[in-house]
Image (cartoon, rainbow, N blue to C red; front, side, top):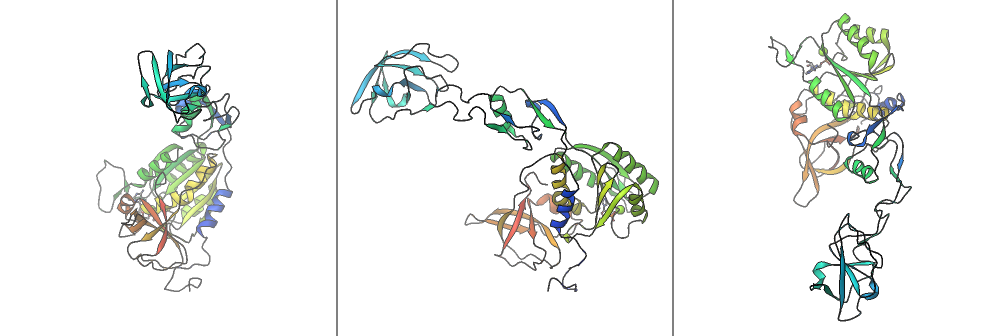
Amino acid sequence: MPDQPSCANEFDPKALTVEEAVEQGLGAVEAIDTAERVPVRDALDRVCGRPVSAPFDVPRHVNAAMDGYALSSADLPDEGSRRLEVVGTALAGHPFGGRLDSGQCVRIMTGAVVPQGADTVVMQEQVEAGEASIDVGHGHRQGENVRRPGEDLTRGTTVTEAGQRLGPADLGLLASLGIAEIDVLRRPVVAFFSTGDELRGVGQVLQQGEIYDSNRYTLGALLRRCHTQVMDMGTVPDDRLALRDALTRATETADVVLTSGGVSVGAADYVTDLLAELGSVEFWKIAMKPGRPLAFGRLGQALFFGLPGNPVSVMATFAILVRPVLERLAGYRGAGPLILPARATHPIKKRPGRKDYQRGILSRDGDGHAAVSTTGLQGSHVLSSMSRANCFIVLERDRADVEPGEQVDVMPFTELC
Ligand code: AMP
Ligand code: MG
């Protein structure tokens, strides 16, 4: 029975569901609406601030889709073949200035303007070319190999929408319209630091019981992949004054402050007091694995997430809870991460009570279907499981052990982790 606390499950009636936590997070943010104008070349991955519409048709001119001969469909034979006089050449960027008369054609290259009097391009491979004439056979269609104006974009259509993240194709599309600059939204500034007396920076010598601060590397990279402006504030010891100072400095400039470590049960009580003193922060118990507990709220103007310290928990809570909030803040209005069905190739251990984000390896089985297995040991300290994985296996809160062949949801890491 998943809805009763017992030693066979992890049901906690006071815990928030993942969906409730995401909703509360999203409810606390308003999208940034200050736009800045940037060269289109620099707009990759930025969020479009205002809709852009096409000032003219693309293509602008009737043009050839193939190398061949531009001719009038009236000259196409119904049977046998017909000889046409070649009266000139049209190259991309060098139109044929004249007008075709009956019985004439023009040698034309891909992208060149189809001359007046012509409405069809016959591929060069499909004609018999002579010195100054061609023989064209029957069976051709009026308008073949001709691109019409506006086939790509018609004047006035929206090319990029507000809230859309600009990809390589969008930059090209804007350039095809001669647009040199675009209004994009300011990127959120996210300050983050790690907490823990045991943490040392890479390059330092470890004493007994000390570990390297890996969360700053994963978090910094996740934030960059989220297209935020990142302020790495280093490692802060478990010390009230140091923590107070770091939090105060972070909230002065950042839209969002992220910390890792120090919010678990057993962490020093002053963290709770400190967060209460500097703002309004709740400690969330989320029915999620890995990843509880988590602190969320406001410190001054900034949103605050106090993530757990364990390296896998950091990455999972970031991907599932923080990322949607950062995207909403950034003004991004696109779809969330993709969730796909896959068959489990092996048994997966799962106790009801928490929604589980296990590390998975997604592939295609022999029949071409999506298949997934776990990376093995699933402890929240096993960062190598994240490194080997290419997806989360998402197991619903009430689900129990998964047998081989059962269908599960997977969340591919593409862009996510
Ligand atoms: P905490 O949430 O501070 O109780 O930390 C939980 C676990 O995560 C402990 O084993 C910590 O040593 C570990 N941990 C905390 N912060 C980091 C970090 N920045 N890098 C690697 N491990 C960490
Ligand atoms: Mg700690």
